[in-house]
Length: 221
Figure 1 (tube, rainbow, N blue to C red):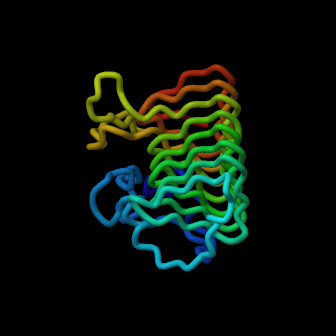
Figure 2 (cartoon, rainbow, N blue to C red):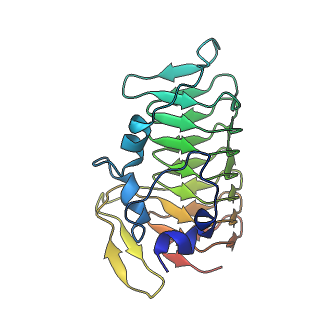
């Protein structure tokens, strides 16, 4: 099975009437974190042709479109003192709560939640994914119905700044070709409070992680 569908099986059956990124390389889902090419999250957002009304009339909302457009679905809820840097996409029914920070390349899908003081950078939250309390998500994909506990951090850079190595299900390692890559968190997974994942972590669907854990490599459910 292609790695994309192994980790995010709901992508095979989802109604793509709502906006979701495209993966040209389904065996290397992390390829969309690259800053180059049309497959990248950033470029895909820039290529969107949408005419959503703007929330710029909210004086407590900080929008920066100097590097790309910010698309906010009319039904999305945006709290006070939120900072959003384009290019960015916020989908139908999504909720961005008080003091959240969305950096460029954030793709927040239908009914996903970014909570108070959470920071998202160059990442995809698939439908109903939640980063609701004091979370950091960098260069990662949170699957359908994933929930991050308070204080969970998805680290995306090695201390030595070398390329991120990926540990596959069969035990083999491969070079992702990326210096920044956080995690692929499979559909329906639950991450406990104050968990830290090392760069290149992959969680199978419906994985349950205890609080205060440190994650690395391929993690079975």
